[in-house]
Image (cartoon, rainbow, N blue to C red; front, side, top):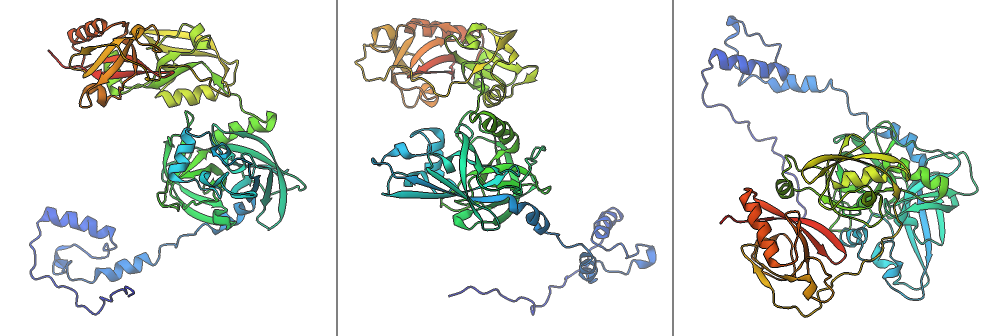
Length: 521
């Protein structure tokens, strides 16, 4: 059965059952509202008091005024100008002899792989399909020209591992393209169309996208090239778990599979972002899409064009956000900056004297809001650049000068304690809900710190993510080697009237700081 709209026009309009007395003050307020609705023609002199504002057909005047309002212009003029710069990208990938997750565009278990596996990517080749068919696998995406000589931008995950790349322009012509370079960390790729010239191209915007601005997404969803959808910028600075450089623009223009690598245009016809991912429990658009900002695209594409790869500045520290609990533990007024969990050996940071527990608050005089902002700032600088860091070191301000190194392409795995060992009898830490033992007494745990061998699931330690096998290296800024050291540090924190205490914890090969609330008494 089909639901049909109900026509209510024959129903009589309700009439007021009684008049209301209006005070002079109330009348003045209502008059100001009435004037805004096109009722200014009514006089409010004493002799006009017989006019009944509640029964006069004011809607006729309102309708008359609304009819004079200009109709929306629409987006046709902008679309006509920018759509020729957008291309459909088709890739062919030879099926590997062994079907496995090695054929995925991202490393198995990586943040980007988990994101796309959970939410789905707006490309024509979902990660789950790679390496599970025989013969040739094809995929589709989108892109756009950035110069008349055929350079075009798309996503890394669209062309990654492709044996052949073809593009189709808005006029239906097909060309072969070559991958010039890719950057998996930002999921961007630069390709070059062969055998053509004088292509229409788009300009990357110099302006930062503002929340609420109109945006047009143009691309190749489901192989339907040249599709245009409209929406607004919903948010900025989104972190979708792709990596430390996440700074996505969120838009609500419908974006679907096949839109990956396509542009998001502003009302000037400039590209504000490259559409990369969608949040979609259903697999289709639900109005939540993510675009790489034009500022990031400019920096990455310039390096890909000049040398085929991207080099980023590197100081060599593991960092984490400064939460409210951590700020309280360190005596900070605001939860800002980036907390150094551990400097890497022989890194620029280590050579400059930066230590675990330091908080980086400024880079070249610019305030560091959080750990992600520090990663983006340092990554946006060229290796070899000299910088000045303001840090909070053991409660005192300190300035450090260093020269940036080059961010390694791969991170070496560090051997760490895996928890599969026989534990010695440990000592309980009161009120925290965990039992610890000296690390030196547990094989594979190292020589420093204490190992967590049991955690009460209802305790403060469990709430903060402690688990069996974690190694606590420091408590309250002091190294610990047994349970007595832990208790002494907690006692000192209580004496200083602190609500929580900061612990440096190692899980596997990664160190982090955890602020744990401490009970009184």
